[in-house]
Length: 464
Image (tube, rainbow, N blue to C red; front, side, top):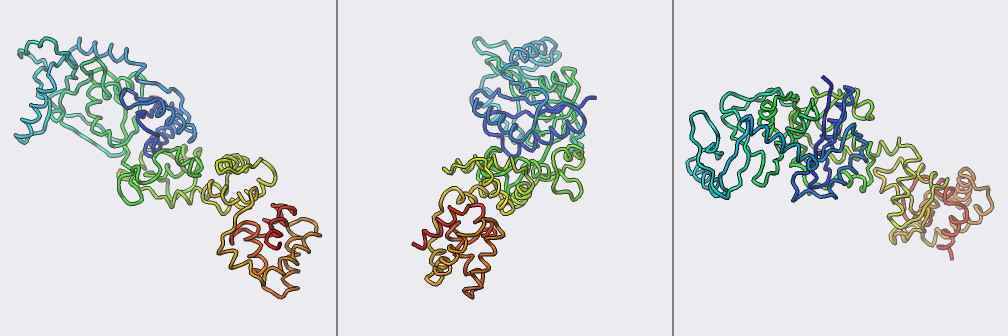
């Protein structure tokens, strides 16, 4: 059997981190087995589905690099096929018309709750041998219900959770087409998985309750039953269910916050799955390793600190050209204009080891392109009356040297020797004058990248 997996989000919001993990695992499983990965947009919830949400899903998939072999398929474009199959099911007796009004169903539910029994449809319109059905009421459009087996059990060996069995007596006859003729979510999923020949359904465990109903419908259609793997939920740093209040509500927000997609993918891969003690790996390696046997059945906990550590690692190892492109984009967002020059490349190379995210990297090097405004506390602490003569002598010396890191460093050594001061007495005022802050990499390297004209101009602004 050829492996065919699918990712089937509903476009009622952004592609969130849980959905991204589901997509990643489905994608990797197909890659591992030389199969196909299908993208399906389940947009039957017309009231909540939006074109903007569809685009957000596509953008998120593209940013993560999760390429699909087929699709995207849209359920709203398959309505005619769903309705055709519903008519076939009505004809073969695996579905039937139900004329219960909303008021009847509400009254039935209330009665069952008062009796302390599980609320469920009582099958009053379900055809049975020897059963007389009521006369269809005039002017009441019927829904279509699936005739679920009333005896036995529906069971599957979940590839994450193990054996699951549900008594058919626990399942009532769910509606597969509304009164206006539109098919329902559970039915559309069944038809799609059948006709798209999905072999493995990897999805969140919030769908476990749908699975027995879907298996019974697949059996009624004579379809092959996929293998199911239900992934446990993701908890936030605080141990609560991951939600909007935990920060990033969409995958693309991680891009906005300065994360590299490689870091997010690597982190998601380890969120509920493991391969020994391996922590850092690329997606090619992940696809070679990935299996469903090592997915934990317990909830995974999101760890922002771990994600930040991975992101810092990937910034250190990221191709310089990509960092240049990302940094220019983020500098522009701050109103700072920079081009892909050797100066920008040198600035990134100097600061990339210190950055946890791309926004921080852009912020750290912005002073190379826009004169910084120094913190008053740093100015008062380091640019003292005692420091000014030292700085003046340094300006005189570096005005005449060849402009190289080595020559600048030698000039700094000469000045501290001549004035009999410790190195920080020169380096700290220089940092404040040149960068606007008291922390930076080696100040001789900073000066070299700034260039003689800009460096001396910024120092002299404090001496005049």
